[in-house]
Length: 407
Image (tube, rainbow, N blue to C red; front, side, top):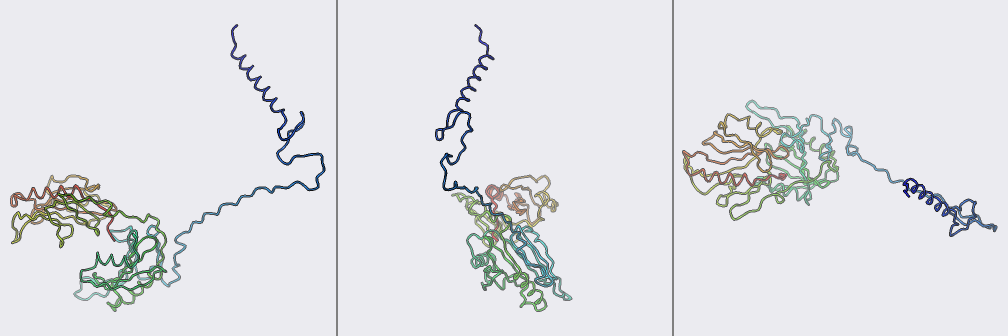
């Protein structure tokens, strides 16, 4: 007998529905139910005996709505321009501050650090008949990265140790900026003597500077004093919109070996290895030179050397665009694209100066540009130099690392 699949499927489903229906007619274990009566509902048992108390009423469940998310606009914390006469408001959400700009001051971004520094430029002194350049009232407000455990006093001390002239005294006083402790240093060197306030706020460090000091130039005393008081009395700090972080030398610099020493320049933000038989020159930052004399020039010894330094070109340009501005000094056919320290670079032979040199331009993060220069590259006059120049060039460019400069 042939089995019909459809038949068996109909038979199986019929049995399933019968069993299910029977199960639905069975009385509840907790409350008997007669066949044909409505099913019992969940709740207190209902009996025929009279009750003396009404059944307990269970109030409907209630839920507490979550607290609304309140977003505070940093600008709401800032002073109103009308709070000080003849002022306008400046807000930097990225850098976490706002301030009032006094009348008579123009506001601009600093050329080399446009994302971190604003400048307020005020009146200029009257020019004398033989004077080529006058002093202007000049203020800077700098966002200088994470506090790294420092308070304002420690920040001022560390800054003075790195940037002040060797014989410059540490003249400090304590102040407050919008309730934040500040350390003020006076008589700092510059085009004219300066004062600067150092502040730690919301895990970041700031430096506010003024040139000239009001007491130094009576002609500019009023606008200088007014600018200083207006900025410091109106300055408000709030958490910066961008992360307060920095890459430091100890995190990225290579380790010394028996054949190579480590050179670190915290202010310019780079480090490299150089041959162990070369010496770092204290009087020329970024320079290492050999002890070997390869010739004489103008009565002095010529030694193979290499220098790494800032390349003060226009921010935002590529290495080739920077090089194009001085292409007349480049040996034809010597330009090559390269990667140095993980960043784009060009290498070339420069024919300007007393003798040719091997050079490079590197554009690192945040648009900072650096130069590398190894010399002398003149086999005719200095036949012993090329091996030293080549070795120091390969060692330095192969190990050069960039990090956030110390500000």
